[in-house]
Image (cartoon, rainbow, N blue to C red; front, top):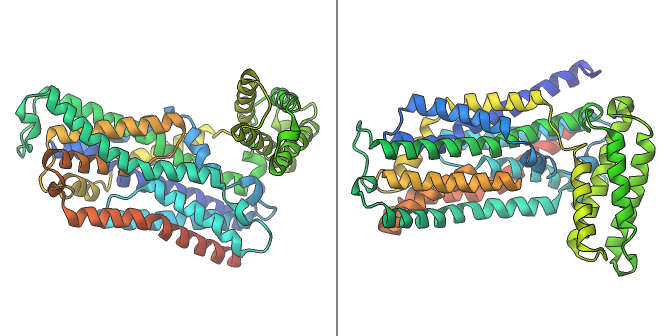
Length: 467
């Protein structure tokens, strides 16, 4: 397989299967949040709800693009961490996946809504931090801290925004909808009025679709990390992209950058500037007259990826630094060229997207009951009303949809669970929450990052010593 020895082939297949299993768990762990509202309001039968949600999750992954996936890949600077020993890549991926699966499966078993996003990001950061304990001078470069901070901020804010937004939506409901039926607990076995059911069907469907767009892409990102780290020659660049077109983009970036006055740049910025010029020149030399990456030797393809990363990342940093003496139009043109250049490395094969879609969709259809029971019964002191279910779903769908549009990983669990809590508070204040459940969920959320960081880092160092 791809010229790998038998042991490496087996380990690669194992890593790919583990990535699929993580996404399968993600399906019944996270998507249970989406179906909890329609099940507990008798708006949809459980079997129908999970199949409906599973299909929309599948669709969300298929139509969601790969912006979030690339955000996951970029958390670890693959251009720095991938080396000539593929077993080092295997050690990295195995540690990452096993730690994420252990934590996700454990929280599911105890019926605790927990963020798969936090889990995978904590595992990735643990790998990066573990490089401190290995020979070499990777240090802080083993983690893309800029990307980590952006991702961490999104994950931190999502439960707070979900909680506050649900209270606001409930307030709007009370102002606009005077029918008292929507604010009462559902009668067991009795369906709500058709207009309420339709509203809940739509909101459940939106959460499921956007969950597929966001969380499904995380699985795609994991698969790409595996393939790039073990098979960099085959998967580091998109072989369907015209290299001469990218050469043109590189030339335009270089042409615009050299217009800037370097005397106003700080020492660190001057180094970035020099790196841009150096790697743009190397890319043009390495690609030569080749039409696409198929015409480049496999051993040289990863070098093209490194060139693109260095040129685009450093240029973006110079733009955000605000010291480039270029006009607004030139900055706009520079941003456009960066986006076009990234097409060479920001991609995922169709089979990866389809495989992750299937795993997430199937996972949605099993194992959902534990989390559904917690969300539906144990967050508030009463079962959720129709209005509360709709409020939580509206908030979650809007929040996840916006995050997917911006290409930021966000937690479906945090958005919806905090939305349910907010809707409970909107009715009777904080006294309407079950403090024991809230404490357990909050503690789990707080522990997710440190536990997965320690677990993945420890496993990585262990596997590096063994493999």
